[in-house]
Image (spheres, rainbow, N blue to C red):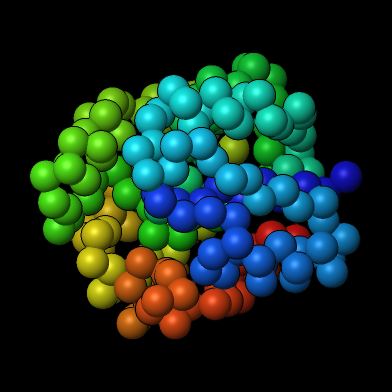
Length: 185
């Protein structure tokens, strides 16, 4: 069965932004969709978030997609990094993904530090998926546009660069991201 797992961003939940729209649209196309409410979302920790996915996701296969927003994208890569060697998935969409962040306050820097300083084994990620789309906005207040190059170089992601979408939140007027639907088939 075609499945999509959606992992929200830092300090978000499953009912925010464009997640309900995407869930409804994918269900219309016959996908089984799960939008997680990640634990401790105000102070996300790598092990806690990855372990949560390991606990909640019973199986993945070549009919499985992941969609991650911001820190959700990192969580997906770290989950894939730990998957059983022979498991393959269909693809991943990352919206406003990052390896490094900008314009953070001291508390945000403290929370982000493990995520920005703990390396990801990209070869292990690529063992499980080689079909990535990363969507960025030129005016994202937290993700510099140079992150697009890092995603292209590290995992071969196809890149879409948008204008005036900020960090892709409802506060910035983003309620739909049609490019995700085009990618998830």
